[in-house]
Image (cartoon, rainbow, N blue to C red; front, side, top):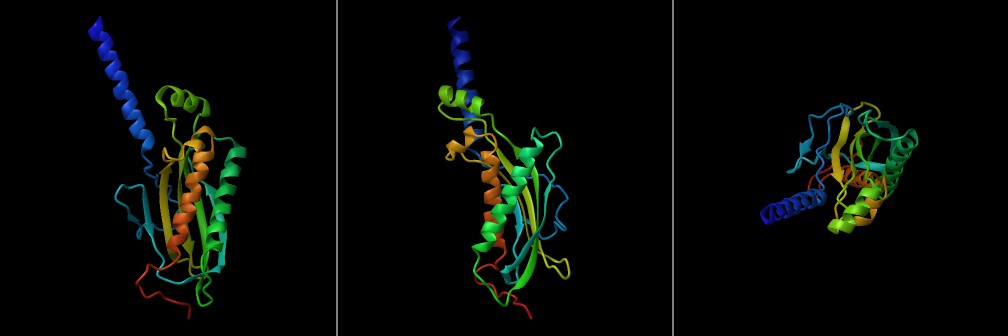
Length: 210
């Protein structure tokens, strides 16, 4: 009997450790939604949590406009229409905010941004409250995946692109007690990461507007 109890305790500890390790990871492999005009130039990072291509042209943020912000997540996702609109609006707002913080470039090119939310993982605040009480950490993690690209308005040429999936880290513990907060955090990260791709890499000779 004692051996069974010890085995059960060890099993419970092992499960808790695996769950905790999973809860700490931020890697979400993004699905390919076939939203981007091209995937050929994307270079994946080491953990496959994102793939991106950086602009080699100088882009003037004052001449950047946002076109489509679409919902391409699985139709089975437990998201209401109101929540869907809120998340799409959140992504649009985050992109606008990030673009406006970029340095002006009067000789830069114009660009049109397109984006799609391709996956959303909500959290259960009640489940996280229980796991935080029993295991000292909210284990139900949430996040989102996004595809974003910048196009030349005259030719449709892809200037920059990003495919990113992100689970909120355990360090952002507070957001795990709000159903959509982890997804919103992931959308803000995607907007921040993408805005950096609108500028040529340091040390390269950028192409300015003719």
